Length: 155
Picture 1 (tube, rainbow, N blue to C red):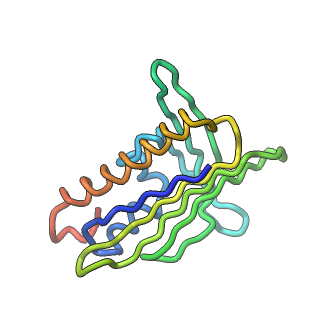
Picture 2: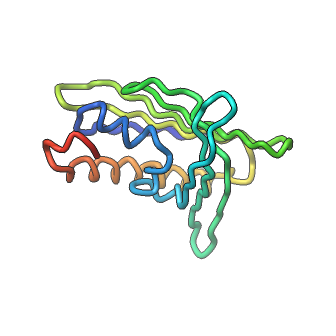
């Protein structure tokens, strides 16, 4: 399953990237990301997080806990988080990629792609629920950036 959403956000790129670069900030604007705890970095120095994803399907809720690492870090352009468990077992891949491109002066187009390779969260209903979460997250991120003080320099 692959879900992709794009949204145009107010810049500058550094402020937008700051919100996308740290999984610990995602609960501020992405309700799919329910809880995040930063972990010790990987042996090769990559940042890592314990992430709980939660989605509601009618009266039922699905929850998934993942260990995610930041596998790509290209400031102001691309950040990728990938599932990276350390329990020695094989796990379905989860990948979240955000790509930033200047679209106009003080505007940044952000494309977020969520890829999942398993079957627990598969099926048309759950795919639609995840798609809705990604769409709402993009809108909440835009709202968060629009309400920041104009000269703050930080989000």
